[in-house]
Length: 152
Image 1 (cartoon, rainbow, N blue to C red):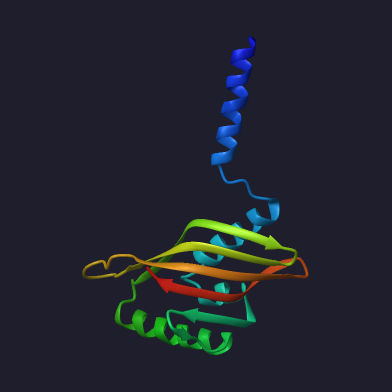
Image 2: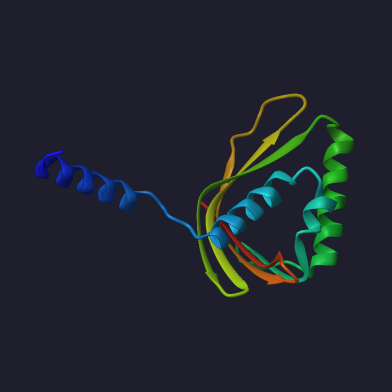
């Protein structure tokens, strides 16, 4: 291979690697965890298993109650919706996650897309939030300890 071609190849690899996010295995683990949490939006009990009891949740300008009360409120709201529309579904999608890991603490930011799909009638447009989540790793497992959501 000639020198010019070698230089071009090296430059191409450097440009490509600089434009592609590179995460550590811990950061990848946190992203998988967040995507799992999001995928469980239809199963509040399973989702709650990923959330620590001491979680603080900020949504807009409001601080929600502790995790136990928050889960109870979510279940009541979900039950009321499903009573009116048994085929109602909710989906949550994580977009463009960015993660930083500091030992046993991780901070993640992403765009959260919610799709509310009615069983009957018109489908509402998706809702988007900026989301920041703080996670703590204890006994080898990540748990969500703080969430902050603001509408876009």
